[in-house]
Amino acid sequence: MTIVALDLGGTKLSAALLVDRTIRHRTVAPTAARQGPAAVTDQMVRLVQDLPGWEQAERLAVAATGRVHGGRVSALNLSTMPGWTDVPLQEELSRRVGRPVTVLNDADAAAYGEAHLGAGQGLASMMFVTVSTGVGAGIVLNGQLLQSASGVHADFGYLRAGNGSSGHGDREDETVEDGAGEDGNTIEALSGGRALERWTRRHGGTGGAAQLIGWAAGDARAEARLQLAVTTLIRGFGDVRVMTGVEDVVIGGSVGLNPEFFRRLEVCALDQPDLYRVRLRAAVLGADAGLHGAALFTQRERS
Ligand code: BMX
Image (spheres, rainbow, N blue to C red):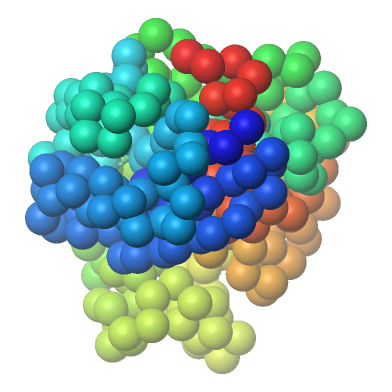
C-alpha cells in the first residue's frame, strides 16, 4: 500500500511517501506555527504535493501535536500552536488532497510505531514518551493503543508534578505557559524542550536545551535545572507504573534522545524505589517514529 504520512510537531513538520512500509521520499520543514492553522495546513498540503510520486498514495496518515478528537485538532499548549482550537484538519486535508485522511496524536502515532516496528517489539504494554518541544506520550496496554473520544489520554506532559506555585523552585525563572491553567507545574513546563530553551535564553544562551545540557557539567544552576527536568520525568514514569502496571518506557524526541539527557534518565531510573522503577529503552525509529506509526495505524486500524 502507498501512503503519504505527515508528522506535525511544534517545531518541525515532516512528510514521507511510504510504499509497503518503506520510506521512499522524506521532506522536513520548520513548522510555520506562529502563522496559525491556515498557514500550517497550506504548508502540509504543499509538502505532500512536493513529494515525488505522491499521486500514487491511496491515503494520508497524519500524526499531529495536540488533542485529536474526531479528526479535529486542539492544542493543549496554545503557546506552541497558536490558534489551534477545534481545527478540522482531517476534513480540510482530505478535501484539498483528494484522499481519505486519518489523524492521530503525534505521540500516540510514535508509540504505535515503536510498539510494532521499533523498541517496543515483543512488549505487551509500554509507554512511549517524547521529550521534544513539549512532552507527549502514548500508551500501549496489552497490545492496544490507549485512545479516547475526547483525545485526552496518555497526556503525560500534563500530569501536575510541580508544587502548585510557579517558578520551578528557581525564583529567577519565569512561568512556562502550558495552556492548562497549571503554569509552571506540569511535567511539560518542568521538563519540555521549550521550557529548557526558555531557561537557557534567560541565562544568556541561544542554543536551547542542548546548550543547557552542555552547561550542566560546569555550572551548578544549570545542573540543578537539568536534574529537575530529569527527576520530574522519572518520578512521573514511576507514578504511571503504579497506576497502569506499565514497566517499560520508550524514550524519544530530540531532548529525550540527547545521549547525556538519556544517560541521566537511566541513572535516575535505577535510583528509584522498587515500586516506582521502570525500564527505559531509547526509541529506534528516531525522528521517523510518528511517520511510520501513523502509516501503520492507518493501514491496520483506520479511525
Ligand atoms: C504537547 C501537546 C501534545 C503533544 C506533545 C509533544 C500541544 C500542541 N501538544 O504536550 O499533544 O503530543 O506536546 O508534541 O498541545 P511535540 O510538538 O513536542 O512533538
